[in-house]
Length: 214
Image (cartoon, rainbow, N blue to C red; front, side, top):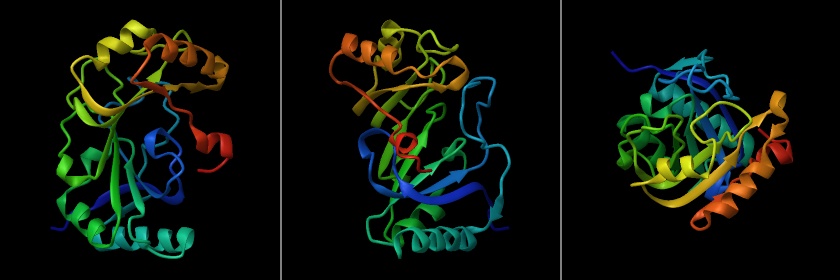
């Protein structure tokens, strides 16, 4: 029986975060997460309900139509961001191979709680939500800095150092947590902490929220 992919949404925009911020991208947001809102109560993504349950061909068709609507076609080298929820639960070899055959460069944004087959992707962002996580290497480590605003694994610089210890990433980012009830993005805390940490840490700003795009 052919596999069905549970998809929350597909949309064309610019990548808003990290080292690839500003790049045109099709976002393929999978439904489902192995951690849940109990681990990440401040999560700003509604990943629970699949709006589409599609086989491989229909998934590719949805991505194709989105690329045409957003960029006028499936431009060679266009970024395809597999996100969620937790995309490593669903992105598999058939879908990866088919997307690459259509010219996409695949980026995955994973919580790192389970090993990721890096041969499936061209860029791997790991954003752990637990102090202990499985995927210790990739292209960028992006930590959401909870600081004193909300509960989480990154209350201070020492916690950030402990989480990053023993990892191997090309880029290291600290990103504000955007919790309106706690005063919105905690830029001040994050900036002070990045300055305390020093290189290779950098500030990641959610530029899509600043620009008012998806």
